[in-house]
Every structure is written in structure tokens, then in C-alpha cells.
Image (cartoon, rainbow, N blue to C red; front, top):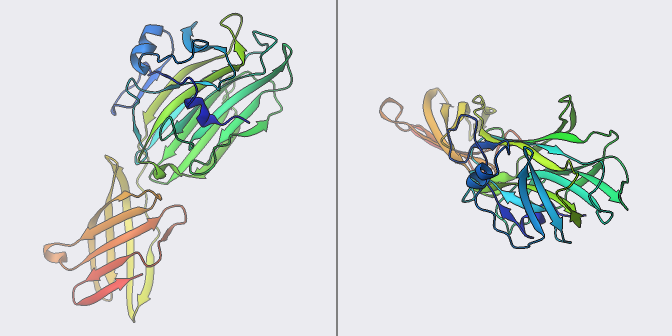
Amino acid sequence: MEYLWRSLLAGAALIGLGSSISISSPWEGSDDFSSGTATESLWGAYKQKFPSLYTYVANGRLGVIHNSNEHAVARVWGKKWHKIPTAACWKIQADIFLPSTPTSTRTEFAKAGLGVTPSASSKQDLGLGVKQEFWQGNSTGLPVLLVDDEFRTNPNAEELYWGQDTKSFRLKIVHDALRMTDILTIARLDSGATVEERQVVSGLPAAKEVVLFVFISGKPSWSAQGTDLGIDNWSVVENNPDPINLNPQNATYKGVVYSVLVAGLDLVNQKLTGTVALTVGAATATLPITGSIDKSGYFALTAKGTVASKGFGCVLLYDVATGTYRPNKNTVTAPKQKAIRF
């Protein structure tokens, strides 16, 4: 089984995307592959390492010339490899087209897809793809779905044999840093019906930034003649999900009843911001709270009172995936009260 991440290592090519959407971040954009010149200017100049492996733009799609046992040709989004922050919320998608017949009796399979990785040399990735297998010039079955939903540790793409003869798909990965989830979706392009969908606890915070790529292959032989294999309508856009409330902490510490309630937590410029209501015994205060997302995906939050709320404060470490505070990593302070730790 081929690893999706290896598509970045063997003969990788660098591209960027055309733009027809509203752009608010430098790494956002789109490409409908209607112009080879536009594609090259947006994804970056093609860096060809293997003369028999390269992508091209024709008939409104990104295609591939492949005559090698090397892995899939990959193109990385951004003229200078746009680094996408994992502490932001975003969505990437592309339309994928598979052929019914190969361009050579030597062709073993054709595949295409998209993914996310820390760097071209990394073994980590999150990816989606579809593949059609061949033998001696004929299809050997229905399309195969490729799903790699474990970013931290698993370089394997799971292969799912799907029981429908569909040749066009829409692949989508939605990263929600505020809820710490990734949703990977493969849908039929003709009807929009979902074929496969996974929602997983995001492992992306293990990398502060990632690069996005598409991959395409007709291994080991694929020509530009008589093929529907291609990629179209790529886009990456920033999302702005609604703020969230964290589960409250209500307990007693050395005989003192206390509570912690973080509300309206939002991501603003990749930083967490909201309010926290603190109650310690009979004393209460509501403070602004700020923080960031650490490499484990935990929310590291701090608040400190001033003037009327002076003496109140907290340092918190929250696991969104479990909805709990990390044990023994949290401190609450209040006037005339020893620090509360939980």
C-alpha cells in the first residue's frame, strides 16, 4: 500500500491556486485550472526532478504525465509553500475525476486526492483520495476510497472498497481548531451524496503550521491521451465558527466551594479570547480570558483581575476533546484566599 505522504517526496512539484473567492488570509485561494499560466503563477514554478513525472493544465483540469515507478506527483499550495496555521479554522476541497480505462496496458492504477502535512519530508499527514485499479488495460473493480484520518502517527491510507461505479468525487477536509475536530468527507460529485465521512479529534496542533497539497498518479505509465484522470476546483478558505462555552468546573477545595465557567470562547487571529466567571466562596468576578492552543491541542488560558476584580485570576489547561480540565494543571486565585489547584 502506498503512503499518501510519499507523494511529496518522489518528484514532488510545487504549485499554487487561482483565486475567485474573497481572500482575508494570505494562504487562502482557489484554482479552477482554466489557465496553465495562472496555475503556475499561483502554485509556483514547476520544479521537475524526474522528466517522466510532471503535471500539466489542460481542458480545465490538472492532469499528469507519469512514466515511472515513483509515487504520485504532488503539488504544494502556494508559490512559496503557504504555511497554514493549525490554530485557525479552514476548509480545503477539490473535485477528482477517475478514468474508466487506462492509457497503457502497463498501468496498474490511477489515483488523485488532497492532503495536509507539516513538510515535504514528514511522515505525518491527513489525506483523502480515490483510486481506480487496472490489469492489462482493463478496470479490475470499482473505485477505491483512500482515507488517512490519523495525523500524528499513521502514515497509511486506509483503502475502502466502495460498491458504486462513480468516477467523479468531491473531497473535503474541514479543520475546526476551536472544537479540535477534523471532518474528512468524500462525496459524489454528480449528486452531492456523501460516500464516506470521518470526524476525528484533530492531531494537527502537533504541528504549528502545515502545507496543503494535491497528488495525482497513473502508475507506472500514464499519458495525456484519452484520459479523464484529473483534479479541478481546488480551494482553501478560512472558516469562522461560532464561539463555544467550556464545561464548568464546580468543586470544593480544602472546604472552599468554587466554580469556573469559561464562556464565549472564540479564535481571533489564532488566539483564544472570551470571558471567565469565577466564584470562590461568596466572592465572584467575571474577567476577560485569553490563551492559545498548545501542541497537544489543549487550550492554555489565563485571566487576571484589575481594579474592582483585583486578586481574582486563573491559569487553566482544558482538553476540548474530552471536555475536561487537565488534572493538577489549573489554578484559581481570589482575594484573601489561598490559591485553589485542581
